[in-house]
Length: 112
Image (tube, rainbow, N blue to C red; front, side, top):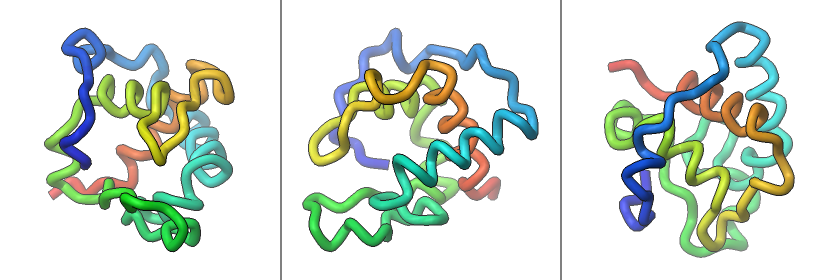
């Protein structure tokens, strides 16, 4: 994941209030597909169709390295606040929807 983000320590330690259930995962996938897929790609590889128009392109968030590099709270912060060219989702998505996307992003990441 992109190391250029300035994420406050208190955000890094946030824990999801949303239980990782099949329903939360499905809702997260639906929100991801609607709001994130265009840039991050279907599998989180940073190869979505909009990447030809944006710089810098998104990093690959599907790897084991990406899983190890950031906490759930960090991902939530990134989704919430954005950083150009990634838009902030705080006003577009509810807190629950953003946490569901965190659950879905984790499901894309390699466990190895």
